[in-house]
Image (cartoon, rainbow, N blue to C red; front, side):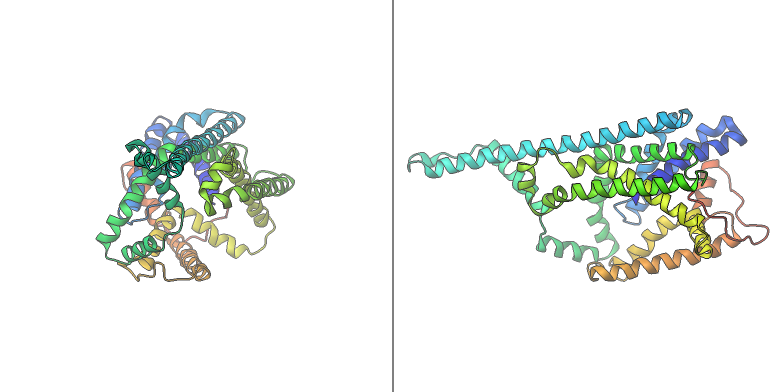
Length: 387
């Protein structure tokens, strides 16, 4: 669902710039850059303060700045750019695979030398591996070890996550640094950019504002889910092998099928699920639920960070300390409880206020002045759309 979230954020870029161009055109670029930079700051707070190392706000803030020049392009051109970004992401994945394959081949060469030495005469057995060969062997063994479940390492991780704030911070910091820097610049940039560009193109076509015909949404729902899930099914054996036997995956695979196809599986599936949601909304079923979901969506920024607060306080040691203590099925109850809290909170809050609390703060920081917050009269929940 991160693909759909990225698509919606891309659509939000077009919407923000269009609204501000209509009211204060000259200030729109400056406002947009300030908006994105403040979002990146909130992302750092989420990763380094709330200790959620899988934060996406920082990445969204940075990528959004790079996508500013695309706003004037036609939807077809933006879609083409999205495809190019997806292909680059696939290429980066293949590049990583090729590097891993090279490391595996060096490891095999060292193993062959060791076997040759063992089979040789006693005098030849005195031959030792060079420092470079030792490094090649240790590198691959370390990679394979990192891919396997390590009970001892897992126990250390659980103990750290159940500790006080400073211990959790020190434990999570390397993960946050990895996500916000090396991983982002090597892979995440193209992953996020491709989905945001797709969202920008779809918004210009009227997809997210419910402007397509029912037939078009039906076709996109069926086609998107059918193609997306077919790609996922075809990629499953490759993905499973990479998890269960990484050495075999590297040695027997010509290409990393699951990694190469992932950008397109996510794009088609995201369009399919979004189309299905819009079709359900058009059907008129459970209107009370759509109103609550619309409130949650209108406060998406607040709710995203609220989830970090709720979940870290529930799982981490400086809260209730349930990290590693629940069975898989029990996590669904936690998800349901968080959703219930946010459905109720968002609906009630927007009955009295114009924006969510963090939306208001973000908007005030962007415009450089305090924005109006309280409604003059309580208002009903907004009409639901996907944006």
